[in-house]
Length: 397
Image 1 (spheres, rainbow, N blue to C red):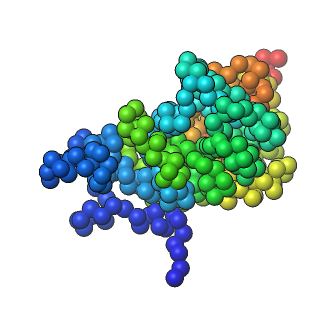
Image 2: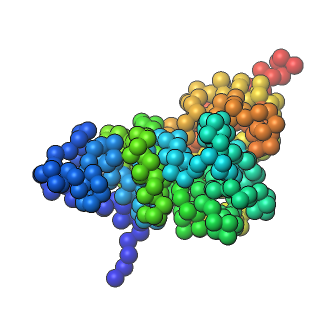
Image 3: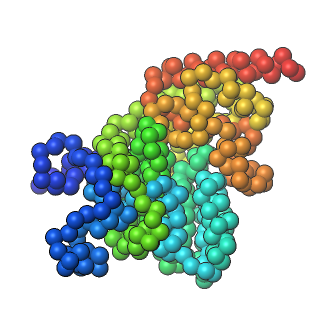
């Protein structure tokens, strides 16, 4: 008997709705009817399966969770109202006063702010570490350390952490390894197969793929997901039915979209590498990376996110961004349309000057999320913006 690829399995996996709709319906409901008082009691007390209230479960959301779990090679997944909601539910489930967290340098600014500012009010400490300095993670572990959190590749520097090596460190210390897999999606990376305990997705990015909604998810073993579900039930960071339905349908096209994102991104990365006004390009698909062996070992592709450092610092970077006509000035990633932002002043603005530089984020760094347009049109827009920017720079010198 042959086994289907997980993308095929997820595509054909939907709840049994008892009707002939080829596309699963949308369940817009807040509550559910019970056959009896006894059934209501059994469901509320987890003695019987079934829906209780849409803050707990909803068929449209459950379908998204099941499909994502298949694609991440997880036993279960739990959906949340946003990627940040996923981090909040994770912390509610696994952290308490006095606990210590290790976090990768340069992780999304709101994630770092949540842990360092808000969680510090409840006695939780957070220590940043370089993604690639594997030995430093082992040395930083304390008796109070409860988890290691990082995204790889890093956003926006595209640095790659060794998941298997970090997994060995986490396992030996009895702590959780949590990997944010938003940039590559389950199409190009499956951290659970490399030893991660839990995987987080900001599902409004590449999973949605069209910038329509926000959402989040955590995937892992049933044992580790259960406390997160309990926290979600009390905390209310629940994904709505409509967004759950959108994200479930989006998973049906994720594989095809990621292939096109990668094809286009590679064209753009090569163009930027050859441009005289670009100092450096960061993209895991470029063949001259020093960590190519690691990239090839844990990634099956490279996705649509890249960054480049332009000459002239922040002033030139802003002028370049402002001269673009087709590329959207937008801080999201994973959309069908190509987007650009200036991480120093937007996504990572809450980091200090020194922290940005330590994470590899410079004033001249621009981040591009390459969309599904014809790649030559993207490059033509970039080329025009470069010409206008550096002509303006020369005229003002």
